[in-house]
Amino acid sequence: MNYKLIRMKRKSLTISVSSDGEVTVKAPLSTDASYIDDFIVRKLAWIEKKLAEYARRSAVLGGVTDYSQVMLDGVICGIAVSDRHKKVCIENGVVYIPVKYGERDARIRAVAAWYKRGAQTLLSERLGQISASIGLSYASFRLTNAKSKWGSCDSLCNIRLNWRLVMLDGALVDYVIVHELSHTVHHNHSADFWALVQKFCPDYKQRRKRLKTYTPLTAIYR
Ligand SMILES: [Zn+2]
Image 1 (spheres, rainbow, N blue to C red):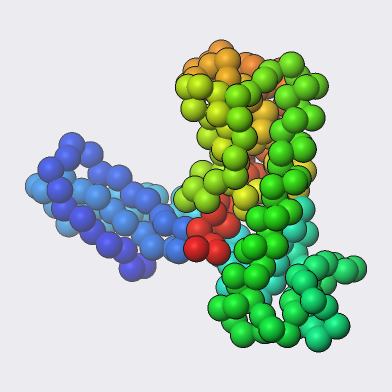
Image 2 (cartoon, helix red, strand yellow):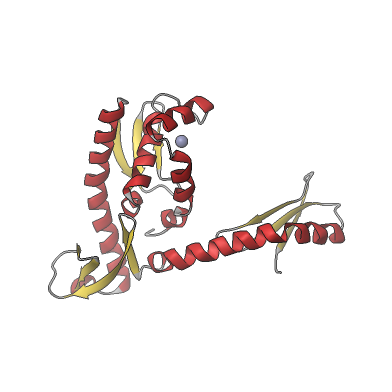
């Protein structure tokens, strides 16, 4: 197995697998090579599980992350360049791109703009609905282009939601909104914070775990 070894001033050995399948071992300066080999052998089942998980994930999201497909509301849709359409739109699970945006870069920009327009309406409405139903209010809402984060809430209760949330299904969008609204009460990730999230979203743990599988989507359309 190929892995990257980083020797550094530290006390223990750690191993990590990145989302692009790279295995990295960080080791103290003085650790023997044979000890590192033994450590890797002991961790092999875990490494293989991680690698399989990432392979599965990139197989599912591959078409979305290479822009040959589009994901909307948790559903992966094909795209077609069309001379019948003047604007980007979705019909029966196919996203149509006007001919003038047919070239790859123009197409990616047009799809991003279409996503953002949809996100503004969908996310502001859903935030308003959930805020009213759980009785937690916020100061303002804006879309964000944040990298690797789906949402945030600052100390003045201004909520920001990543426009890429429109790619995800409603259960995940609702979880992110409940999470950020709960930060209007607890500006941290304390046990009290998670108890509040759970009150409004009893299966938040499963949703949070599922949301993690979509993290690669926060890196696209940049
Ligand atoms: Zn948080």
